[in-house]
Length: 280
Length: 274
Image 1: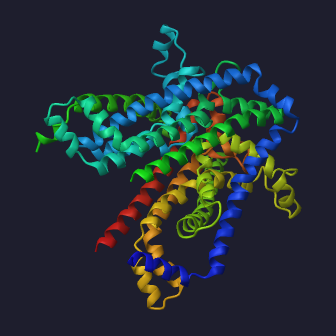
Image 2 (image 1 turned 135 degrees about the vertical axis):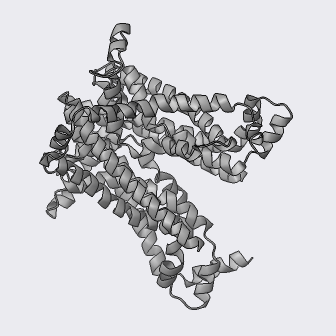
Image 3 (image 1 turned 45 degrees about the vertical axis):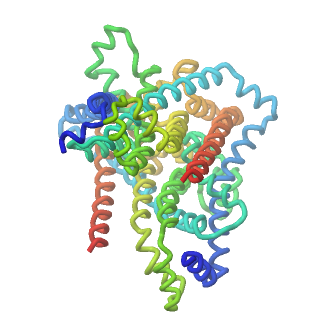
């Protein structure tokens, strides 16, 4: 009741000009910075007509790039989710020395440029590196090949899942898990029955963010991929190549696929947020 | 105590897996960067990073990221405020679309902004007629970095603003303080810390950003060349140690800035507790 009174009191004293002024500034800023760029992608994509659009997105190299992006995104998301859950569990459910350091190391990739992320894998596995000999003997290619793309994407999306669920698991504490453990439940069973239901929405949110970034990563992948068409070209790299060849409408057509996926991701994100708020 | 910490089974397994994975994906590759730079010798290191073109690259990267983060702090604050405090049509939509820069691949943002802000683009046409060169310029880089950084500040301030206790604001209002005074004396001190965090995140992202910037920057040496692009071109010339040297300086500078922000935050927290 007191809260409500306060709200109305504050709202009454709010200057109408300031209120609408701020709303208009916000809306204009978002229209200029977000909506217009989105519309321009669609309009450029369709600038040569619908048939040219369909042709551009069903071209062989586009399909191959789409497949590679799809495979990379799935592998990266699965692995980083597994790691994220594991490390979040370790940090929040046990006491050990160096916990803060481990937490800081997880966030490290956020502060590192994607280009540097790509560079470190070239330095690790490329020419003159410590693993060069072994790789040559076993005939495995990492740099300028798909393993490099996956590694670089793993690095860039490394913190996403862990970051979303660590605060949730922290807030939840360890009482319930400890009780279950004393009654003899196995670790995996405790996770599935007790921890997972509590972190469900945070986990989904982290997975969505991770896959969005994995799908769209450009800088890191650009360094390690070598841009071999039909082989190591992901969708964002394919967009770049088409654009640099002045095939603008084809570039935007391929880009529009990524826009559609981005919008789907945004919708899922909002549903997840809405559901998690409802449960609280 | 030492017994209770291991009541829950699985410590060795999860800890082991986490450490191995962390080492393989992050620590070993990063150490390769340090080893490479250490192997090139001090003279060559400074010869590389002190070249005028490289120094200018740092200036462009850090300068534009700073300006873009400032722009994002101002608009992010306004956006968070509007979304938490006011009701208006399409609010859900506005709130939902703010995360677009997280979801949209940077290369897509890059080509879209370049087309919009080029001389014949929808927005570029207007800007060029006022004599503002909006693409292949510093202006263009700032536009791209602003786009990339929009969600950071909004999303760090929004939850704090939502949880803010109305009491003090109420009291100040009843005592007759003006809205502007209340904002700066009562509300702003509460959101200063998340604002700084959001600024730091947007800034760190902007410094390293490559995909959205390369298209609109035009990459003119000594003018609009960003540091990540310089790393890229060293790599293309197979000058791996040169690339590593530029990268190390960038990394250390970013870490120092983030560290400084953390120190300020800690000091603020301590002051509050007193």
